[in-house]
Image (cartoon, rainbow, N blue to C red; front, side):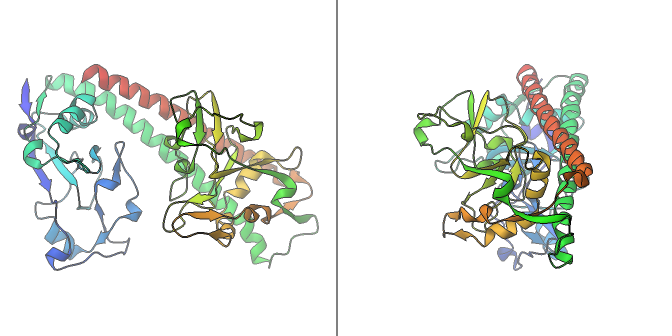
Length: 405
């Protein structure tokens, strides 16, 4: 049966143009208060970078959210920049609905929330959104035009069945990400504590330990120098600074397909669990430069190289375990050390001296560290497998979207 979107919702919240200043108030940057969710916080069905949002106190919240609070089963849909990203609220969420974001409250007597959420991610719905959108530089849709979008609905039983497919896949993807965040978080704590022990003892190491420069145990190589003309569809992928998240972490979406025009030397290729360090940064706060991230996926590329904005750090033969090297470089101590070697204003660059002059406390007999080496190996391989599984689950989700919508 055919409906307009207006008939499928009981409420649309739309606070475009609203600012604290217009309300005689102001944002609070206290992240213990209420976050403001805007279009930049919604991506691929998830809420992201909430810690970088504005925040508001209870007074601002009550004045701003005049239509009530966000509820479970509400759908947040971005109205522009970018248009069409969506998120289904599945647990209590106290937030301020900020710029460029609609809240859609499904009429559950007509449409299943999970079906509605899946619908918003489909190519057919996205096509209808963009057909009614306006603008040149920034493309967006107005509420009155959003309400006019026509949607064909199956019966409620079919909606529940289809919606359940997407619920199971989405929840499994989310669980895998939570597991990965937990495992990587544990490794970071272990890595930081590894250095903290020696800091607490004023840098003094036991007699059977010694400080070694990173170059004593590892090869440090620079990436491939490319041009924009080489970035075309290919079975070769290139890791870039886009693989690095501002908060720390490796993004599989950061790879770029490339057809190299020059001969690629062996050391320009990268494999799973090789460590990459960002040597260039376009962010204003040096969020990325000096970050060290193990390669946790190469997506479906047959071969993978890394760009000139990165360096690769891999063990010299028989000098150090690959897993121990990864663990050590995950420490915030590496980032802190690198920041003193940064130069540039708009574009930040890391001196080649930074990693070469970094020192690591190491035992003369690595058997002392067997337990944390094994733990690191198990954790990183689990994280990698979860990322690969999520990639397959997303493929299945896209196939289902094409089938049912």
